[in-house]
Every structure is written in C-alpha cells, then in structure tokens.
Image 1 (spheres, each protein chain N blue to C red):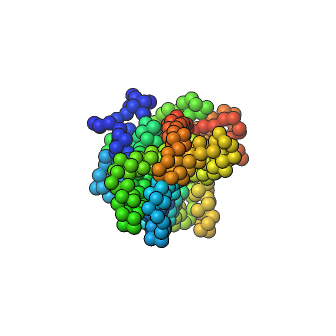
Image 2 (image 1 turned 45 degrees about the horizontal axis):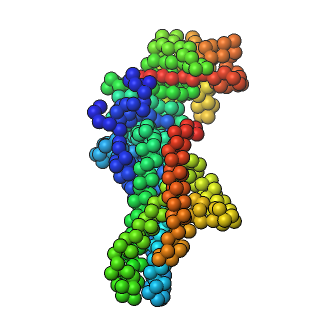
Length: 253
Length: 237
C-alpha cells in the first residue's frame, strides 16, 4: 500500500513514486533514448528527459550507449529514470552501490535538497555509516517486523573521534571520499558514527599516523545488531549475521 | 496527479520506439526485406509457379522471422532487467504483453505486405497481370489474408513463448526442439507450433491446408494466453 492504495491501483504510479531498484538499461541504447522509452508511458515530454539528465549530471553523456557507462553513471541514470515523473516519493534500494566518493557525496546532497523541497526519500541500505549520515528517520526491519522506527537524531549521540597531528590533511582526504567531518580541530576530527573503519583505512593508505581512533556512544551499527541479533556482537559474520536472521535498514529524509 | 495508466495504444508506440532506438533491430528487420531482393531478381519461372509460390515467398521467412523477433522483443526486457522498469510504470503487465504482441504483429504485417506486393509486382512484370491473378482481386486478397494470419500467429507464438520462458536461448531452443520432433509423427507434422506455418505457406497458393492454418492460429492464441497468465510471475531478483 502506498498513499493509501495498492500500487497497481494508483493513477500513473511512476508519477507519484520514483523507484531506484536496479540500474537496468539496454546497453545499445543511448541514455536519452532509454529515458524516452520510460517517459512515453508516463506521457512525459522530451524537455523533462533533458531536465532529469541535467539534474543527475549526465547531459554530456546523454547520447552515448549506456553499455559503456560506469557503475556510477548507471546509478545516476537509474535515478534520472525515477525522477522522470516528478514524483513526491523516491524509493532507493542500495543507491550508493558502485558510486565513487564524489558520487556518494553528490547523492547525499541531492537527497538533502530533495527533502528540503518537502518531498520524501525512502532509502534502503546495509551501508549503515552512509545511512546515519544521510537520513532524518530510521526504520529497522527484522524478520518482517519493524523493530525500530525513530528519528535519527534520537538514536544516541554516537560519533567517531580521531586524534592526529595531520588533522587538516586527513579531513581533506575524507571529504574527497564523501566522509564529511562534523568537527575539525587543530589535531582532532569528529565524524559520524560508523565511519571508524573507513577513517582507519584512509589514514593507513596515506601514511597518516593516528594517535587515537575510537567511537563514542552507541552508533547505528551497534543499535542494528542489538535489535536484529540480540546477544550477538558484530563479528566475523558481518552485518547479515548468523543464518536464519536478517535485518534490513531503511531511512527516510 | 490526474490521468490513468498508459493504454495499449501508447504502449505500442513505446514498443515501436524501442525497436527504432535499438542498435540491431532496425537492421535485422531491413535485412529480412533485403534478403528477398536477390531471389526476386534472379527467379525465372512460369506464371503458374510465380503465383503458387507467392504465399511462401512473401510469408514463410517473414513468419519465422516474426516468431524469433517476438521472442527477442520480450526476452531482451528480462535479459537487461528493463522489464521491472516497464512494470513499475505500468503495473498492469498484461497490457504490456498485448502491446508487445500488437507491435510484433504490426511489424510482421508491414514486412509481409511489402514482400507480398513486391513479389506480386515482379510476377506481374514478368508474366502479366492475369498470370498473377490481378484480374481476380479476391484471389489476391485471400492469398495475402492467409499470409497475414500465419505471420501474426507466428509472432504470437514468439511473444507467448518468450514471456513464458523469459529468455531467448531457452525459447529458441524449445521451439527448435519442437521443430525437430514435430515432423516425426503424422499427428504433429504441419500441426505443431513450429511446423504449422510451414504447412500453410509451403503449399501452393492455389491450395489451402486449412488444418495447418487452424493449428497455426490455435497455437498463436494458446501461446499468447499462456504468456498473459505467465507475465504476472515475480521477477527474479
């Protein structure tokens, strides 16, 4: 049920709900023609096709066959397709998959501007750090039941603290990868919870010595595991945990 | 937002645009026409043979080409996972299948009508209008009617089987196996989904194998109905 009715009963459902479920396209067809194919049943004109291509930054590649697109470009094309009908609700399933750091940051900024227009985006993802940085409201589903439904800012004040003599350089490197520090001091950084591993990797790759790297408070990952795998810590099983139990996390802006 | 979901007419336009914007489909369809040019130029037969070969020359290759085309039109949507995008825009999936069939049938009718007219013109130039029954328009219309029905039925078999199996390899293999086994038994020879068009069109134009024509039409309807039921199955994730 969406907007109080079954999806199939909605008038022009793709003009009310834009879904980014899969970055599918015919490889021999250009991006523009791919969108025109999807625009025709929506009775959406060529101008709107050009608008969404511009919105996702694909106008320069609009006439290239999509078979040559990178994963990031395919992701943008899938988003453009979802935007064709100018919907009020966007549903995105693992939207950051394949995106480069610039793409991740672009998507985050896009979703913020989307929400600022008073519209809703429902984001389904297992990249918890990304979710915690992007959404306003979090829903965790485990075994078909909603086990958490709460505003993101009520889920503890977890954050990652980093101490290093090279704080400014590390902040720049992290920002390039879409991890924007929430605080930068002379020799310390503060980042959203769930980003400790990525911070450690970036520092190691660039030879930056860390004096301290730790998570304060409860982060989203811990909340997720506590709710979906009670009694189990986040261990080598990874976020999917032991067989037979599975959780899904959704966020909304 | 006012307005209803797209109707079949709009979906046929969409399917036609898909064909036009595809890299290989316009080339393949043009090739179906061009491949007939050499035999048109070099075939030198008497008037009776030209008339009796009219249905087979204009419809046989086109019929099987439409069977394969119907499979590919449907199967490529599943292969490239664009079927999900189409179903999101038009949740009434049966309308999409009907539109796909109408598109394949329309393409088949245009190709077969073009070839029929071309073969008729070549025969008329070589043997005169009466030799090609131009003085009996009902004969000409009936001959093309049989071609049209058979080509549309073959297209329906392609779309139906493509929708059932959701893959071109499996569908072509299934029909290939049918085509290999149907001639082995009297009951299925020129009556099965693959050999029925052969039974209609390979016969002289002056004769009509009505059992094969009925079989071709019946298999087309059956495959399409099966496809309309099968299209509602969940998509593989």
